[in-house]
Image 1 (cartoon, one colour):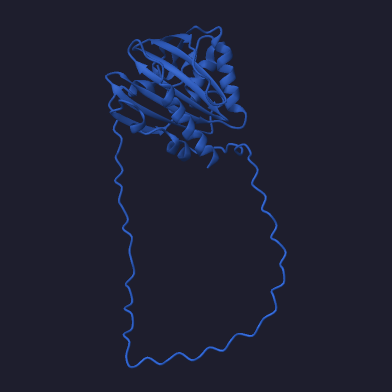
Image 2 (spheres, one colour; image 1 turned 135 degrees about the vertical axis):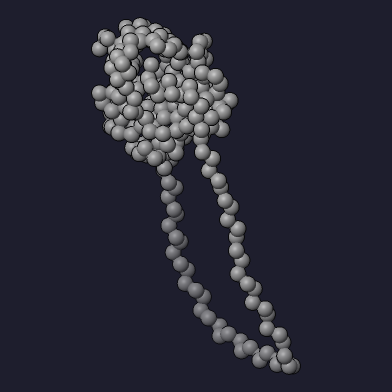
Amino acid sequence: MRASHKRFLVTAVLPIALLGSMAAQCGPNNPEPSDTGTATAAPTATAAPTGKPAPTGTAAPTATAAPTGKPGPAKSLSADELTKALLSKADVPGATDAKTGPAGGDSKTVADNAACQPVLDLMDGMNAATKPTAGVEGFYKTGSGAGVVIHLDQFGAGQGDKAFSSAAAALGSCSSIPGSVPGNGNEKITMSVSKLSYSTLGDATLTFKVAFTGEESAEYSYVFVRSGDVVIGISNLAKASVPQPDQALVKKQLDQVKAAQQH
């Protein structure tokens, strides 16, 4: 099991930003001058000469309405932009603690069968052969040994689709994925994978459940959604009988990513 998943079991603390309010400032009002003395009668106004009628002007051209087009191309997001797009603790029902940070830095999990590696690479993009250009993750603790994990990975042009489609193809023959974690004492693990059904969101959606057995055991229910070359991975974590991620939560995260891509 990935070290990042293990460390999620430790209570995470999210610093609370203190927000200050800015008061509007008004400039001083100048007092009106006092009237002194007798007012002088206003002089009789001279009638204005009769002018010629103003020439009939040419009507201004009618403005052309902006075409109703599709959103512009999705821009590539930096790590800072991905972090801002992550859901907050308040967005995750039942979350008591949250922690966000850059993805990656953990030991790579290697599948014994290389044909199944794309599934693991989708779950752990920053340790994949083709890494994202930026990646962030959020951990939201919802109970003892339970919570929500969110990954946002920005890939290079066309690489998000490739990572997604490669994992989808591998799932067909990878219901059981034995492997090891060389950087964690060569820990041996086995992942039982079962594909799940889910509403299609974004450009593509892929869902499956993984039961890990190794030094520790846990279950994850994953929903991956691709928006352009950003791959959103949301998983629920539990010691057993893990539920699928809430669709409203997934859609909210997708909407925030899409907004960032068009900003």
